[in-house]
Length: 287
Figure: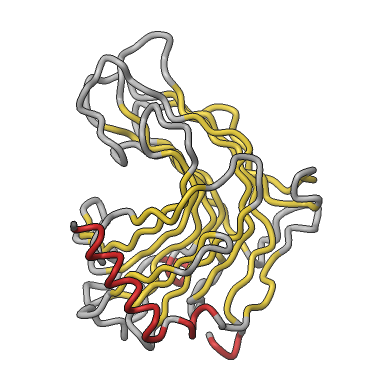
């Protein structure tokens, strides 16, 4: 019933006014057609949690046969932390050098290989406790908090991945959260279901993902391919202040492995190999 009510609210919001984000004119930010990543557009970002081991890591531009173009290739194989409880995470990606005023990000995404490990010795691992995904998004505004702190930063994502151990069906997901402490270790979900399921995605088939922070209507708008856009309202949160996160909100393209800690042998691993291309953002006049 909760999901049904939420869907009806979303549909209502879309009919009222989210087409402003859907019809927004975008400009190409990067098509990754050079030999190397442009340091005037991007900075690198990567981290592996304590006790995990990341191997087979890539972050480079190369030819992609399926996309029929050069594209950003991101991949990593991360081995789980050898523990009997909890989860650990690792990520690899690139960050907009200056994300200030970027309220819409669109990208063509292709997931080529993906693996979410199943720790059979644990029965407490629930869907979305673990996640292997490629995603775009970042922090869009702050509701009022101390400088140099993530406290009250509001971030949103759209991504493709696996979130249920044993289920190999790719889905697109959206989520919006508020940081509840200075390091954003704890968060509050915004807008109901978290994450919001935007439908299935086919392995080895390109899909266009789009995220918009619609400041005029207090909502985030997400779109998976040609499916109808879906809105998450953040009504009640002030969006006047810019985000405290660095680089104008740490808006980024990223792969992430959130894996169950597990003592099984041989050691379990999570893996994703994805390409991202044709990055577009709102035009400078909209920034």
